[in-house]
Image (cartoon, rainbow, N blue to C red; front, side):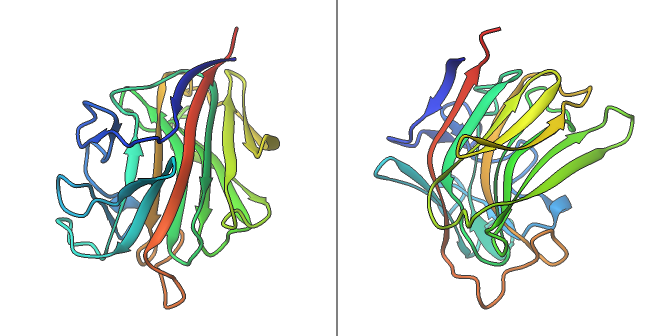
Length: 235
């Protein structure tokens, strides 16, 4: 494989519109109401700046606070939309994911042409289940939206840094934890176009997949990212 993208977070270059560095919001807003999320993806251009680089690690902080979206929490999202996108390859994030009810962290890929689905979820972790990670594909190849999600039991991934990765090929998508394959799914028929990367720390609201935080959730909560890299296969 050849390296095609590498962010080591010696510094954090960002912009709200993606014209330079990481984009810090979706083109259609700063939260996902369809997921019943309770966080506003903020940055310094609109209020709270949830990003900090410390010793080569990007910290994304979720915390209660006022924001323009009128939501209970602020947090952070980074995407390579408008910058880096690639069809097929190996994509990796080394990170420490936060535990706590209501926290929902992940790395995923979306099409550069702004269609949806397809979608690849490299890793999702619900903060009250730090011993389980979820890997998924989303597709509309059959004419209706379908999601295939696999829960994978692992050790507590909130206790330190771990590498989460996916090998995306035309026939199969394989998922890895710390360089060990943990799952595989067939590549959907509509998943053959360039995709960009997203990493985020969401906070669930009532009725969401992780559910809302409770009195046991410690805020501020932080997702720590050591690096994000991508490679292209030689063939």
